[in-house]
Length: 178
Image 1: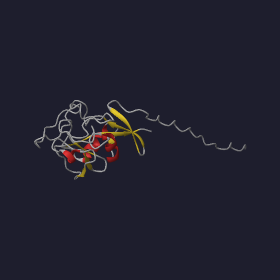
Image 2: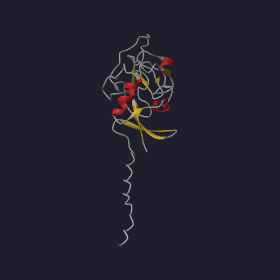
Image 3: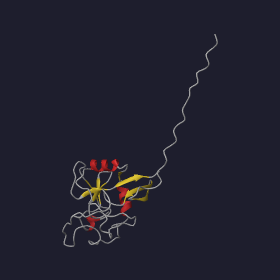
Image 4: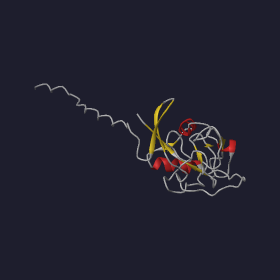
């Protein structure tokens, strides 16, 4: 009998790599951090013209970002978006952002972006005032409408119990650029 032909393994070519994301989604700004470029929401979640979603745990904030194909921002990314002591400069001005009044009275949350003077050089709104924001490391960053002065700076961060929400704590999301 004739010998059987040798068995040849057929290897399918690898699928082409997924296209790299080179631009941010609508409603996000492109920033450069120490580890490269990234995207960050211009407004507090759920977005422009909406009162920020608060009373969320860290896990709920993380899940909401992931459901949109995003993630919670790192503290470093969040601070890069705020871009200074306050988003608008180095001197506290209680009229610029939704922080406590000059009489140290807390204010209610307002629609994200409604204080046009509370915009960072990166084009992000409400990084100080309105709602403080969860970040990936479990800290809450920025001031809220119940904070003023040094408690409302871009560098202000406090560790919170990840399993509890607060009526003055919300979040915004980030995304990676390749």
